[in-house]
Length: 334
Ligand SMILES: Cc1cc2nc3c(=O)[nH]c(=O)nc-3n(C[C@H](O)[C@H](O)[C@H](O)COP(=O)(O)OP(=O)(O)OC[C@H]3O[C@@H](n4cnc5c(N)ncnc54)[C@H](O)[C@@H]3O)c2cc1C
Image (cartoon, rainbow, N blue to C red; front, side, top):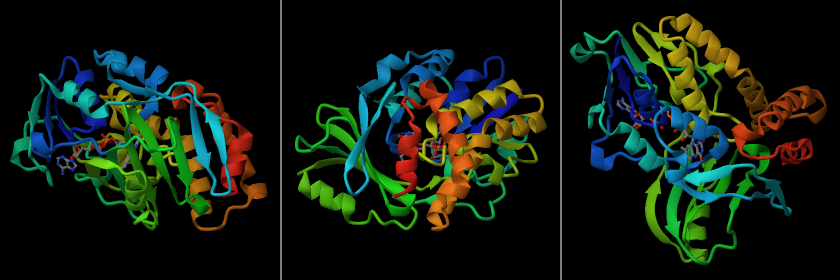
């Protein structure tokens, strides 16, 4: 098959390396020197390593910091989540390496399927939150995010740290990278972090290496239909593969790419498989949605919360952390 991949993010660059036997080209809107992977670069090493290996790369070469604990600041005190493989890694360099040796049309913003796509059998929309080639979603929720890559010796943390906003409308993070360098960032539905990150820059006397930001889609795949439009098919965040409770989309977008490959000859089967795989995302989203709307009730929402807990606790390797029901209940009360 002749396949065009629009978008050179994690989904697009991974897919490019997993479509052996097909003729594949990638179209990326940013020029090569301005392209960047906006992200905090946190993921689960034991799980992603196996996927990255299938694409022909050694994940260990990209690991920056191996976490032992994640400190959660509730605003009234802190508690620690034990980590089981959560790391920060150089996502940018890995994506960059995955693009090498492939045909990438840099600086090519695709807004419609014009003549250039005439000969392609399938066009993958891997444009993330842009969803540039698929119909707009009614009721889409894109949470604004801002992040700084900074250098400072003055941070009080040496491991992962997050501070959820009241009502779980988002959280602020500190993710260590290397030798005094970290990502500090925040995503919040109403942009409540405005000024807060800048105050941190001052307080900890940070040297700013890079300021980045883009919103993240938190509605699940079940709310991102349709996945296809003519010969266009969505893969990754364009069809909502972000775990809503964490805003975590690296592994989910790569898993979505794998499901695409498994069903490459049957797009209806692909859509059904993604929806099945992400059923728990819908439950997680309903939890987040009820919190955001101030309608959360622990008694009535407990079965949904418990399903999410069972999924996360049963998939430690996938999430890179130990999940305890007591911690989820603590978070649900914020
Ligand atoms: C600030 C922030 C921090 C995050 N931190 C984490 C984290 O620590 N861990 C985690 O697992 N997830 C994290 N996420 C989520 C994760 O980064 C995304 O869900 C994931 O990158 C989605 O991958 P993707 O390939 O589908 O889309 P993207 O990575 O967004 O890639 C889309 C690509 O398409 C290109 N593009 C867009 N429109 C067009 C167009 N019209 N034509 C051509 N090209 C186009 C873009 O330039 C981009 O290169 C974070 C998200 C944000 C915003």
